[in-house]
Every structure is written in C-alpha cells, then in structure tokens.
Image 1 (cartoon, rainbow, N blue to C red):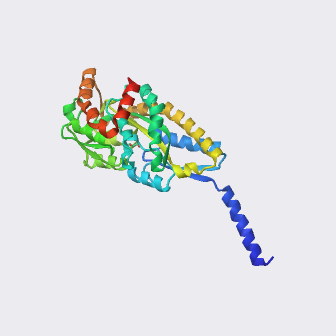
Image 2 (cartoon, rainbow, N blue to C red):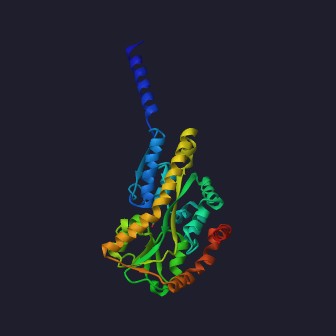
Image 3 (cartoon, helix red, strand yellow):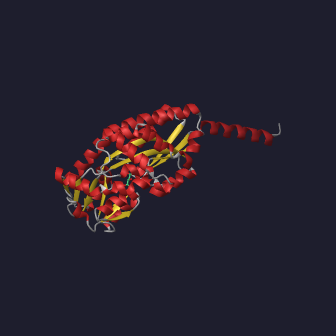
Length: 327
Ligand code: LMR
C-alpha cells in the first residue's frame, strides 16, 4: 500500500478506537451549593452512574449556577448543551407546563408522607409525562423540604409582611402567595438572591434552611420564621433525545443509579435542613422564630385564597387530585 494511504488507514483505526472508548458524558447542571440535598444527591448519582456503568458514562456535575441560571438551564437542556437538570417544581412554567405549580400552593401537603403519596404515585408520574412533548424526560422527584420565611424584622403575623419586597422563585402561585400577605414579590434567579438581599433590592425571602445557609443569606437577614408554609422540591429531568438515544442496557443501568440516588436523597434531605437551621442558629446572626398554633392558623387562613385564585391556572383536575390524595 502506498505510504500515505497506510497512514490514513492507521489514523482512521486509531480515532475509531478512541471513539469506542470515550465515555458518554452527562452534564448535570444545577443552581445550588454542593452541600445541599440536591447537591449531595447529584454527586451520589455521579458516583453510582460511573461505577455501575464501569466508566462508560461520565457525569460532570456543575453546581452553583456555574454554567446556567434558572431559566437558561431549561433552554440549555432543550438544546442539548447539558443533558440533566433538577429544577425546582416552581420553575417549569416557561416550558408551558404550569401544573407543577400545584406544589407551591401554601399548606397543600400536611406531611412528607402525603407529599410522597403524590410524587411517587399516579399523579407524580402523570405530571412528569407532561414534559415529553417539550423534549424532556422526567426521571425522578427529589426533595428539599418545607420553607421558612426571612426578613430584617420578625414575621409572626400575616400583617408583618405588608409592603415588604420579597424574593420569590418565578412561580405565579408564589407571586399570589406574597400578594395575599400584602408583600411585593420579586422573581429573581436563585444566583441573584443572596446579592439582592445584601444590596437591599429585596428585604426578605422564603427558602429552605439548607439553601439559606449555603448562600449565607442569614448573614443579611436578622429574623427567620420556621413556618413550613410551602414545599420546595425538584424534578430530575433529561434531554429526551439524548436519553432515548442511549443503548438500552446503559439507560436501564442509569435508571437504577437514579433510583438509588433518589432513595439516598430522601434519607438526607430533612437532616441536611435540620443541620443548616442549627448552623444558622449557631452563627448568631439571626433570630429564629417558631409560630404558635394560633399564629400557624392565622398564616394558613391568610394564604388560603391563593388556592382558589390559582386553581384555574394550575389545572383544576391536578389540584383536586392532589387534595384527594393527601386528605
Ligand atoms: C430557589 O430558586 O430558591 C430554589 O429553586 C433553588 C433550588 O434549586 O433549590
């Protein structure tokens, strides 16, 4: 064979070999710190996926909005720039899927058990299927926990919210929740929240203790109230074309890895939030208030109108199915 032709054949063989060995890369982008329920579960999924596929899949986790902020990451997933995300259920309406905002309804879940009955049952599966026409496959629900409220004044009664500029996630239900309290909601990306609190763009916010602590929001919030008035959780989602294009046996191994990471996530979520609340307490920057049963009842009454206001938007069927499931 001519020397040049031989060289070309050798080069082609070598690059085919490299291609055969190159792992499939899953870029997993998220917006929170590594030391949160989501951050820790993403790392656990990476470890499990890489080990269970014997290195055929490599998972690159990008925390803290390193790659994309809230809204951009959904676009990046649809375009295939990243393969996996776990956005909060409050952030799906830009895709035209408003039903997930049911999870934002104040006091809709009386307990974690009631929540799991929804996410792990027929309703949860049905909601994930609504993502398919958007080019997205829903794999699992991950927990964070129930939210607390913070500001630079004690928030003990609904009237205490009057006029306060409060950061919310971009959910119309959360917008309505703040408005019925008389506050002024401002939807900001998660990465903008701690700076906005620091600079006084907003005066208060709601989130879970783990999100507040890891973003050091407590350092600029003098008071927080353990109100547990609403829930923050996630859907773990992948680009459907990418997922469907994986070899079947690899996909089912990754599904097993996801199931294990999800089980792990559930065992750490509450504990991670309890520990974060304790760390905030120890930091000494923030007075932590708990509500008496009467105050709880007052908050619940004040926020109740949000259900009727938002039922139409979310979808009556979904809201009523959830209510029946948790009753
Ligand atoms: C927020 O924006 O407050 C949360 O959705 C962040 C997160 O992913 O937990």
